[in-house]
Image 1 (spheres, rainbow, N blue to C red):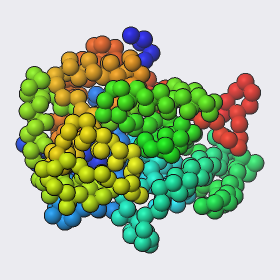
Image 2 (cartoon, rainbow, N blue to C red):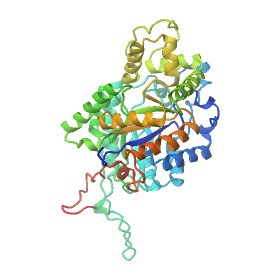
Image 3 (cartoon, one colour):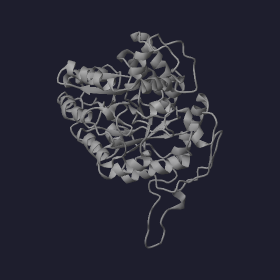
Image 4 (cartoon, rainbow, N blue to C red):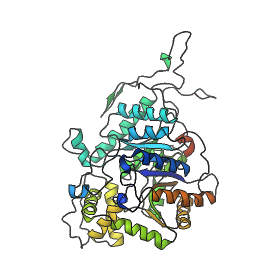
Length: 448
């Protein structure tokens, strides 16, 4: 294969596994969500496995499910990402550090300042996952009675992105001259005041921190709806793409990359990384047994609540042994709802079976031996279904160790994964350009 085309690997951490029952699996660290020593170990293991980034998902409310379900899940609570990731920056050297920050329930000045700070602290390894918030309960934590309407969230997100990136460009790269003799710390001519006044936001600026090392932290997006795809095509450099099968993934890949080209963007400047739940075994049968054991630890109370969240509709009254009834559209994630309905129809699942699948993890899964998993990843990469994967570990530390110790060497043997990091920054390792300052362009024939 082309030696230039390598798998890009993120690790989906919340800040550990996405699987509801991961904490119950034998040997798992049940307290890992709030145990920094464990999280430090995970990050350093990812770096040893030459992962591009530790991606920390986030939400601004305890998940909207009944207490009988909440009490069984470790995924409902976690550290604040912009508190945890700077700490992990100190104990790693190359691993990218990507955090979720909502454009609906944050102010752009806060987001710009925190991610610029993370980029400086980490030496240029920060990434911002731009989300509009899919959990309706978040509204109640920010003075609203109802969740902001879906399309309006995306309109605000687009403006929010422009403000944040404008704030990152407040200072030219050479603004801080620090001339001891003259007593001049910065050049006022190299400072831009944004003075943004838009439909949703009014922000004067400038940002009170130097331009990030990467110019901008890497821009990440996860939405797969029509609005989400368009936002990604316009702004994203990494997208956690959808697709529970390779055919759907190829269609998504072609769609988003095609939208980029129509906008005049280079298609290689966006990396499509679908989430992939990976379970490793000595044999295919052993891997399937591990997955079945893990899923069996998901209590039905939790499973049906997870299904309700995924559908954006209360499923507790559905007949557990009947088929999924028609589900009306809601104000929650539209692409997520569509994937669950498709799964139920494709596999002809009862509500109980669907809930158990969703309660664990219902998306793309690679379950097998290291060679089987590498075969599948190679097919996805070489047939343009993805540029890599956002790996989800079934339980920790065992699932992470299995991947790094057994799958990574097989990928490296095939030339699919780096053996050493290409650079010092997340952008360099992902093969992404450093954005030019929109207010202080580099002179022709040179760069700042």
